[in-house]
Image (cartoon, rainbow, N blue to C red; front, side):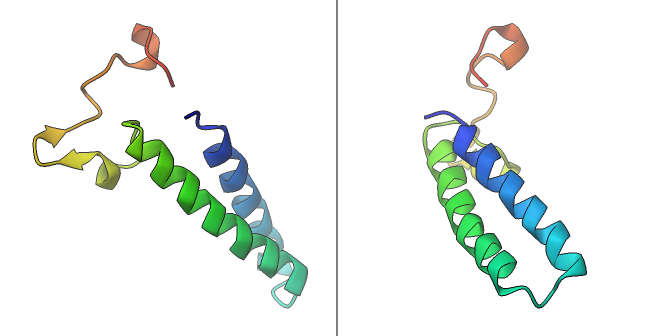
Length: 79
């Protein structure tokens, strides 16, 4: 599982949200935001389930913090 979908859907959400700030009544932008927000959340959960949390709330397990279990990207780990 790579993080490309997380970045892609997150970017679309950010871009659509900026557009909606100035065009709040645009149904196309609102639909684009909602669809990509759902896909972003799904991609983020899948990425976290693969053992690569993006947020602190995704990293907690019964055994402690899981993000310290693998090498960091600058140590040769996957990002």
